[in-house]
Each structure stands twice: as C-alpha cells, then as structure tokens.
Length: 305
Image 1: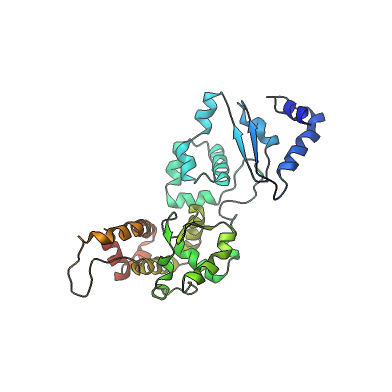
Image 2: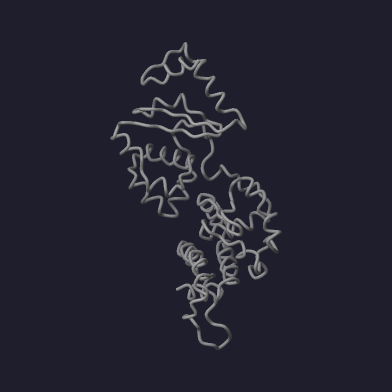
C-alpha cells in the first residue's frame, strides 16, 4: 500500500486501480480518537490535485510545500488569515466566497472590516467542495443553548474577545438587570460548561476568558434582529464593566483624580472592552443610540477617554 500511495501522490498521476489504496490511508486518518498525525504533500504546485487525498476528519496537521512562487503569492495572505483567526473552516469558506465573486485579498478585507458586510459573509455557503455543509453562522448551533449560557454570550459578544476578565460578570451581576447571569465565579463556571464543551468560550488563563470573533458576530446579528434588544445588552454590559472600573471620582462632588497612576493597570485591562462597546454603539440605529445615551454608558466612556 505505501508504494501505491506514493504513486498516487505523483503530480498528475491517478489510476483507478489505486483507489483502494487511497481510501485506506484516509480511513486510518479519520478514525475518532486516533493519535495525532502529520500528512505532508511535498512539491504540490497545483492545490487542485490534493482534493481527493485530503482527510475530512481526524486530529492532525497537513503540511503543503511548493516551489511555485506564483502559487505562494496567490494562495497565502497573512492579513486575511490573521483576521480570520487562522480558523480553518473560516479560511476555507471565505476563500470560496472570494473565488465565487472574483475578489482579491484586498477586496475581501475591505468588506470583512465592515461589520454589516461581515455578518452577510458569515451566513454564506462556500462553493468549494470541502465537505462542510454548515455556514460559519450555523456551525455552533447557538440556538440550542439554554437561557443562562445565552445571557452570558450576549454580554461576551460586546466585549473585546481576547482577554475577558470573569470578574466583569461576577463582581455585581445584579446591576446589569439582565436575567440569567451567574451570581458568582462558581456559578459562572457551571454556566460556561456547555459553551466550553462546544469550544465557543475558553479559559486562556485563570480568570481570563476568550470567545471566537465569529461567535460574537453571529450573536450580534441575532440581537440586531430583535427590535430594542441591542441597547438593553449594551447598557447591561456597560454596567458590568463599570462595576470593576476604578473610577477617578471617589465620591459625589469630588474632583476626578485622573493622575492616580495606581489605577492605570486596571484601566488598561478594561479599556479595550469600552472601546468595543463604542464600536457597537456606532452601528446602532439612531433610535437605539438614543436609548443608550444615559449616564450608565456615558460616564464609562468619559472615563475611558
């Protein structure tokens, strides 16, 4: 079988008598809970030849080498991969959309940086034949989660995705006026269990959460479909951040002590979350923006500014 498989990998060579040899290695690679594997395609100048050999399941890595500089220039785009979080399904599906529409990497990035356009892209099927039937918007099946995990997801969707302090949610959840939020750190871990099992939310460090940007976009798209719901979540999230923000004004009528440097590390760890709230605010309708223009949000933004 190894000799037959080697023959199969020669560029442009395929004989039907080797079909069984092709299926057997793929079956071995796709066995659930099998050891990690590394599949190497050396000097594969034409990526189209690899489709039949590409495992669709299994836990492993694929290394493709090519001496074709033109292939490198047309297939590898660092900024696109970074913006897509190097998420394989995302890269494959967005590549298919680009091929379908004839977009260059720059064309794609211009549209992907626009939040409304990004929502549309995440709901599109890719024309590439890669074995994935789901869109990016449907693969996590967010509608299947109960009220309490969904409440946490609504808040996480409006925060900076990479470094979310869990004390933002647990310090004073009552102020959010949002039903279903966890009451403390232990309760939060319990609520997060189904989300962690689905790889939607992960712990980067003790007390620090992260969530995938695509999940955030899907949740925000869901919120935008419910009139008046986005302002409720934005204000709830602003109140939660305020509960841990080290305000410069220590009391009623006192002068702000912005020069207090000891509070700056805390401000730094929360600033990106406030900035993200401002970005979300800018995408709201004029009516929803009016609903958010109260002290709960304005005071926090002024502090961050």
